[in-house]
Length: 286
Image (cartoon, rainbow, N blue to C red; front, side, top):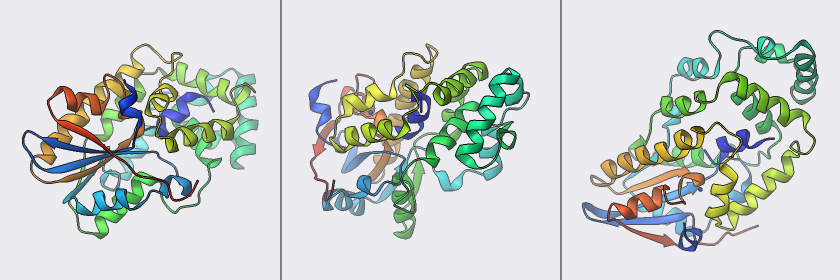
C-alpha cells in the first residue's frame, strides 16, 4: 500500500538518535526518571520480543501514557471521524474507477466497496492494509502496553487528543485521499504490501529511527500534512508528557515516527534542557 497507510502505523538528526527505541528522560523538574518508548501499531510477535529492560522501565514507572487513550474514545465519536459527512466514494470516482475499486475491495474483504461508501479513503486504505498484516498477538503493541497498565492499576493518560490526529488527516482533501487510495490499489509498483511491511518492521527492529522518519514522510502528500501530522503533534506530545512526568514517573508509548528528527520528540526535549539518554536493549527473537 502507499505511504498513506504506513503513516497510521508509524502513528520516527543525528546518528545518536538511532540507537534505541527506549529513552530515559530526566532533569529540571522531573523528580524521578520517566521513559519514552517508540512503538509500532502492529500485532506481529517480533515487535513484542523486547528484553527485560523495556519491561523494567514500564514496571518501575508510576503511570502510563500513549498518544491517544484509545479505550476512552467514545465509539460513536470514532465512527463519526472516519466517515464522510457530505460525500461518498461513488461520487469521488468515475464509474469505471468505482467499478475497479469495487472489484479489488471485494477480493480483499469479501464485500463490495458499497459497504465502505461513506468511509474516508484514508481510513479505508488503512483497513485494507491491516487485513494483510500478521496478527500473531491479540493486540497491537501500543494497546498491549495500555492493557498491561490497566491491569497494574496505573493511572493512564493520552498525550494528545483524538481530534488532533483527525484534524491532521482531514488536512488532506477527500479528492487527494481518493487518488492516493486508487493508485495504491491499482499501481503494481506500489501494491507490494508485504515487502513494505517487512521493510518497515526491519527498520524498526534495527532501531533505525532516521529511516523510520523517512518512511513516514511522504513528499507526495499535501505540503502541510507532514507539518500537521508529525511536527505540530510532536510539540503537543512533549508539552503533555512534561506536564505528567513532573508529577509522577511516566512510561510513555508513542509511535516511533515521532522520536527522531530536528522536530522530533527527543530533540524537542533536549532543546528544553532535559537529559535524554538511550536505554539499550536487545530483541529476544528475530
